[in-house]
Image (cartoon, rainbow, N blue to C red; front, side):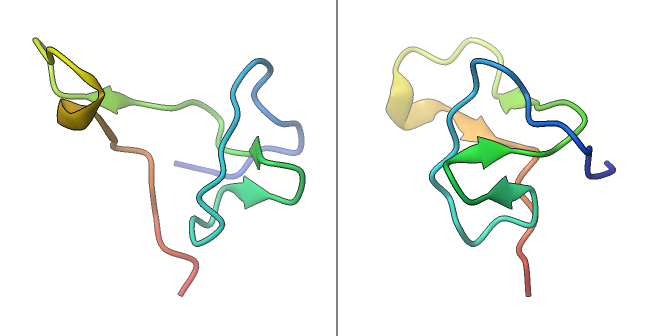
Length: 54
């Protein structure tokens, strides 16, 4: 996954430890992937695009 020059519209990201996070709660990834299939609530979901800044 590469970092984009433009944030993904309509996506709010507050995970400031992610390398795609940009000040203002923007996601700068080229795209995002949310997993897993057949999730039933928010507790079961996960942003598979997350990569640590460190």
